[in-house]
Length: 397
Ligand code: PMP
Image (tube, rainbow, N blue to C red):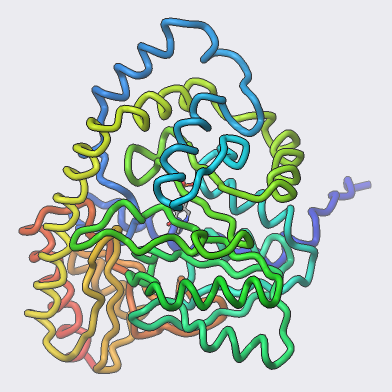
């Protein structure tokens, strides 16, 4: 008798691998200039300072031990101080929960907040890592469009007026991945007011807020309501390998996350949390380091936007790239970014087509371009190649 194969959980049936992760395999060829991956520039990561902090930590043995599930106490204290400055109120260490990157915060929050079928509102286009987590939780997802001021909160108000009751609204409030925009202060206030009036959670996912080029990001949505759970991370300002993210959450959410974190991995790494605490508490060094990163990314962002506008004119509109890591671009001449991609790869440039960020369908004429890993001259070559691919494709038609 052939062995009977056991089944997997039903919820896995609807899950797909991230288009971006699959794409990164294609773009790994050396001759391709990749604007596809959403990776910070490893050459700008502070290797020597991390080594010094690791050595400091390894002078004792506590960094080798299990640590508390909500994170190593001194790191939580450092983060509480930083978040107090950001939120304009005293944040206690007991409100700070350290996670394995902010991706784990999203994953634990989905388990804590969402029953199967719960409604989650996201932005359209959405952060793919959030879509994956909310889908895995069996949530019903509604995506609201964004404009230059971020999420169309007026459409959220209409949704609520129509009787929909979201459990949570996810927003990447600053320098959106992938949309490139920042939510305006007025919208932040309006979103917080709706959250208070209707009793839903806002998950403010903010890993990019400190990477601003022109002016600092506005005050967090969490300034305006205690229904906001605020997430941030050291991945983009220091290095993803530390896997140190954090969440500022009210006590009931904190407690739920703590119970689930115990089951997920007992605790994070005491070593990387001690390294993170060392770096995040070294204020003048950190400020100078972040300024260096912002300077480099800002120069690259402006070069990319300039090249796109110069080369494509009104055949393409793109965001201004005032911070973060991404430019979002829409072809206005009907070019389909998905079918263009193989031609672009042949021409030696990669990007992520917009449909990868759609909750259902859409964004066929759009793409996300990451500017963090190429110098201005390389970005200009990438845009030339892209234009060549578009022209080549249209002459083939
Ligand atoms: N949220 C957003 C919006 C992101 O872009 C990312 C990283 N791409 C994350 C969360 C997760 O980052 P990490 O787990 O490294 O903190």
